[in-house]
Length: 218
Image (tube, rainbow, N blue to C red):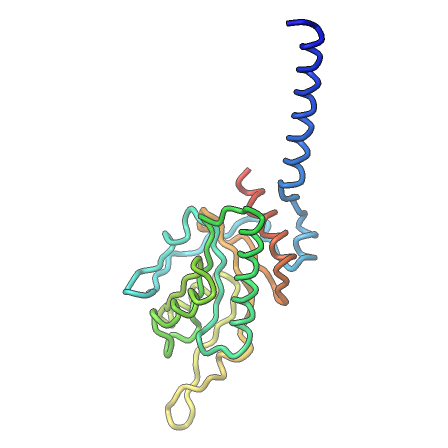
């Protein structure tokens, strides 16, 4: 091979390398610091937190337990099907988050959202799952027993209160009002790593989500 051909080959190799590095830089999510994450509405735990085993039901008597979270990034949201505003707003923002990620070519194969009802006295496993999946196919819903709900919520820093009865013995809805509206993020090891706080802005959420999930997989 002549010197000219060698020189041309080296120049082409150099150009291809520069293009690869440029494309890689603009497509690789930037790793955000804890302060930047907080500024964008995400509180990151210093150390991922273990939580105990749990069990709840979804459609067709499907059991949702801790194994459901393994090998996937999971957003966990505590809400209920009759929620007038906060729940549909949060789930809509989560749907927009997933849409943004899909449009950017982000593989959501191992990403999901789990809606845990805080109204197990009225929501059924089927109704809460259908409610969740009406927003996105990657969303799932489940109904725990009241004790299981209180246990899981407390471990994920979500305040859930017991229903109170009125003078006629019927449950009131006071315990459902102003419920905590955080989106909990669980890593593929089944550990609690942090949470998104409202108000939810899908564009900012997507930057945070890509930073957290991409950094952990490197």
